[in-house]
Image (tube, helix red, strand yellow):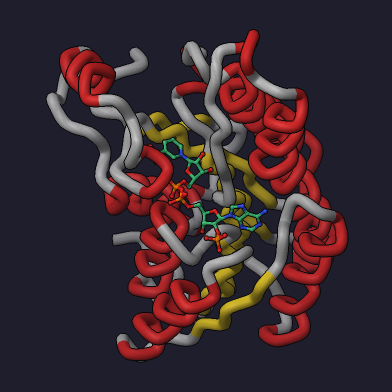
Length: 248
Ligand code: NAP
């Protein structure tokens, strides 16, 4: 198991779902975790309590990371509290699915701002600090929707494809400072985000997964923890797909 002992990790959207799983997995491996949330204060407190109960250190920080003020406040609070940031996981995300004819421009903007703008803003704030330390790990949670495209998700697929471009461009920019930038692309994972998919669609999806199952939250967390570790120090600009073989 790749150790994250003595590392400080910031996980955006760490209050629920995949972000919660990543926060817990990183804490298990020894990282101090800053658990960002937007609206779910009690859920974020529960994640902090779980980490503390296992002997780790964690802090919940409220911030809307789609705004410049929110992203800067989050990274500044983390750095002021723990003195550095080694790992940033850009996980916060949302959906507003609809066919393009029925999708409002506000639904497009919300998804782009939450999924893509947030990652750019948080990365910008983190890179400034990581450059000085000449060390950093940025892990962006994209999706196979950004690789394959998904009908009814023109906004979401665009945001996740954009995140892959961001990952590769930033990896080239900051590589000389020993900062790596990678992405994890989950397939379908059981969380609040996927709780309302129609039964018929679920059946069809499962038929196209060679391993015959969805990725678990833990499957995604293991991939993120590995890319955040010292062992992954020569991997950058990579998109690690965790989808049971669905997108190949
Ligand atoms: P989720 O259960 O709905 O959780 C979303 C998280 O994002 C929550 O912690 C939420 O915080 C946070 N968030 C949303 N908007 C935010 C904002 N403006 N500022 C700060 N935090 C914000 O979703 P999930 O399924 O775990 O998804 C996590 C990531 O994985 C997303 O980027 C998603 O696109 C990606 N992903 C998910 C799947 C899947 O099948 N579930 C597949 C591929 C990729 P609050 O609750 O505090 O508001």
